[in-house]
Image (cartoon, rainbow over the protein chains, first blue to last red):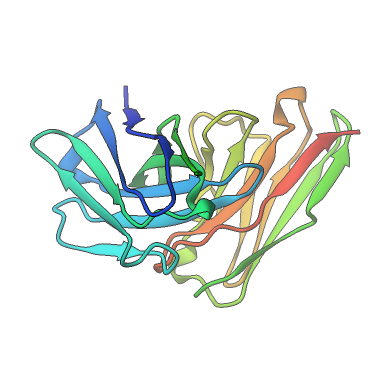
Length: 116
Length: 108
């Protein structure tokens, strides 16, 4: 069974940093591209970052470019999102998502609150 | 960037009715790389349709997707109570992988 479980969310002050992690299981992790998607309270879905299966290709949304960094450790079956220079409007639930045929598996999400 | 516009924003219907959701792109989508997702309150989205018309195995055949180029449609042939949710379209052919703003399907 495919499972994605995010961790690392929490409360952080504006300008601070957080590192999100996503533990993957139930599939051959390095065969799949992965993404981070977020959802602000009461709002729609926003794609943030993509990383290819071997980690060689990365795409980022303009809203997070230069502040967020996606990475992966295929030996540990883990995906990461390093979030720096956090702003109030980064408050959201952050989802780890497998890129199969479409975004086919989603984790339950980890909430991030940016507030002073 | 590819912008996806979903209409309408909210639909109020009754169980047993047929519903159609629209998703329009401002550019032609490559390889019909259009997906639909269903999201219920407090839950992660679930993939419903990929490649514009391929239904994910978890969903029954009352759900169908169609369209190509810039105009795409999701249809539920006969609404069941568990279908009331928010539906999002997404293009995954070209970065940034944009989502539509969603259509909320509520019980009338």
